[in-house]
Image 1: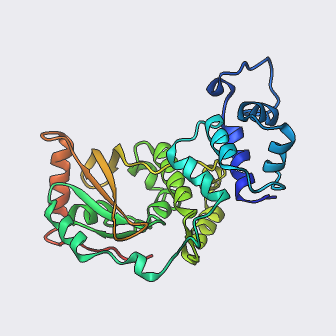
Image 2: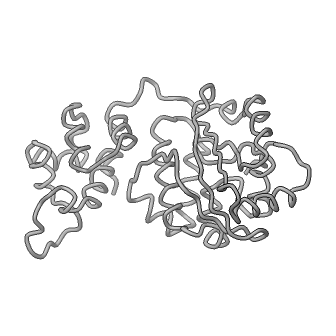
Image 3: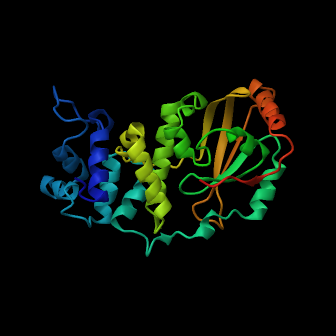
Length: 281
């Protein structure tokens, strides 16, 4: 049974952190995966009893000093540390979701239209694709569940062929969703999405239970499109300043590479359509 989001997060991160990561000796056979509670307490400079109360949800207001100490023990990066702080001290009122959050500024759409050799699309905090340019539209054309990247990854078997590194990409998307949940409130579509995926995908349940938190800004993407074949792309993700929660995803191929030729074929495949809103889920 859940003891609260803070307790769940600490327990999951303790189990995921190894003794090698924190410089401790394994000390022979260990019955528990990851660190023991007393090891976390020692490394964080708190009593074992206090840490146990945190994991059991009986203590929910650790100081910033304790939060930072736990972040160091669990080797959390900046995104995960911010997430941990917000679990304890949510931002004043949070950000209330409204339908306007899914409206893409026409100037952003026009900007994407200018990028004829790059894949570009806008997603929201739920990873719904809100708008895309010609290549961004063509990339997902015809794939079931593609208006939402998480539904596509976990509910469409074709995603196992589309993502050549499916496990890595799935971990990244779930970690992104986790990072996005803490700052948004009153969004029934978000809670509905998590419930739907949890009910229909054992893989999603497995990854969601890890409580990974990560917003990847830059990485390589290795895809296999059923029409044009393999696409090895470099991508960058940009926050859209006047639209909280929206991200602009841009990906391109190396000049002169087979992937560049494949993108050209993909652009021809979609015809002469311009950047347009994606179909809603």
